[in-house]
Length: 335
Ligand code: DAH
Image 1 (cartoon, protein in one colour):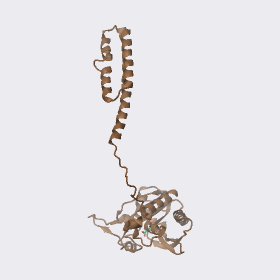
Image 2 (cartoon, rainbow, N blue to C red):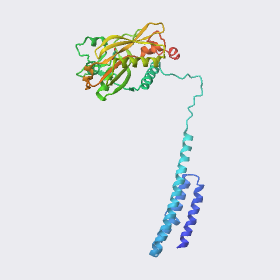
Image 3 (cartoon, rainbow, N blue to C red):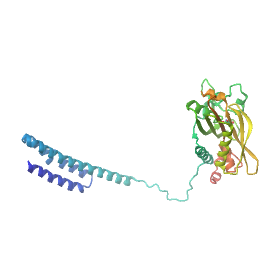
Image 4 (cartoon, protein in one colour):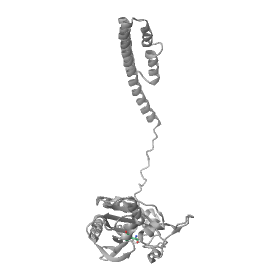
């Protein structure tokens, strides 16, 4: 009995030695069969256990099992090692060299509008806002009604809306501004709310030096307790400072939008001292809050919306907004 165990220990030692320099997975499979297979010393020893005295059998059985476990573990280790090596070799062999040998290819860059949009998001995120999104195709409820622009409202005409006919009973349109994202956000979020929503907007405008029929806006919405027009003015001022640097000034002019009361338009100063109209803003109208299930007695807020393309025109001093969509690489390359 003791002899059998010491022979098994020798076999195990031999297994250890041969596993140390096993070359590949095939060789390992052969070793596995040799040391653990049907005809291996370990399997044979296990079969012979039955012929031993019961008191001897227990100790011998434990010893045989212990040796078997050890050999199994060493084989598993070797398998893991060889599998990793085989995988690395395969990766190396199948590697494709995609290095471009030419060095005269220009890398592209982000489009001006994308750059402006990213920068706007960064500035507002830095001020504690999060970024929201909404669909580009909207129903009349989101684009108009919930924003306090009922069907009969004259403002509805001023949006030069592009309608689409999907055969739906309700009116469906390409959104004419990003303001519907205000509604979608308020419907789904408990105040306080601090969001900006950049995105594409569409109107029947003919493209000219200052208009594009598909353009980009960014909407801002803040709903909290005790929000005032001063917070709105401060936010716009702060954002313009962060976006353009110190030189650019802002001003608010009284205006009218159905979804805000009071409403204002905001301008930024040009280097020559004139003012450029950037967008609209105001205190969110109580009807709009109510349409979204928010109690205007408890919550107040402000909103603003302005054109990203116009901002890019100003920032990069373009003289025609259509440059943004002409995709002339000689133009785009400059930025
Ligand atoms: N949606 C308006 C437009 O496209 C701009 C605007 C005005 C947005 C006032 C606002 C706002 O959020 O409060 O003409």
